[in-house]
Length: 219
Image 1 (tube, rainbow, N blue to C red):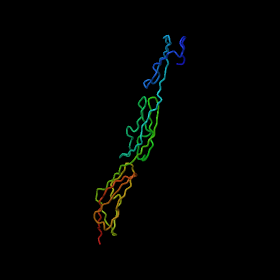
Image 2 (tube, rainbow, N blue to C red):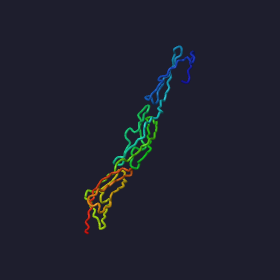
Image 3 (spheres, helix red, strand yellow):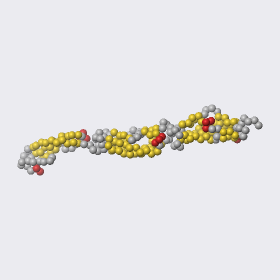
Image 4 (cartoon, rainbow, N blue to C red):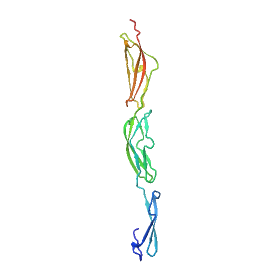
């Protein structure tokens, strides 16, 4: 109300009413307000005014730092509900700057979550996703017998390829160790050889393979 005048009643004594005078989310947009003025003689006048109701509050984001373990395929995704967004009027959409992770993301990663409501209000929050590789490498020994024949010097040896059939890892890099690899006369008979596969995150797998050491040399 910008101005109230009456021929007999002072402006301060004119009774004004506005309807509606309170608004909520359902009123977003243009609302017509009715203004009624009544003087001391009971005479009244009515005017209307268009009011624009707007929502300017951005959604509130709730999110915490999270630790994820890569799967056997070397990837992992953020679980549903990692971040929640509450808005005063409408439901909010939630988007992440990234929501899938691979072996290239091992360690701490900063992720930005963005929430927006139907009125175009936007809020953002950063959180940390720590990605771990806890999957042991795959490793298998050859199934065929492994025989080491000592030479004229009473010694013999094996290599990785003699005892390892296959190996792999969800993140690719594997270091193999075989022990022992050298044998002598004191090792005649069956010997347990330990084969260990270690990946870049120090996850290990160990298998045992029997190696038979023989002496076929004539005196």
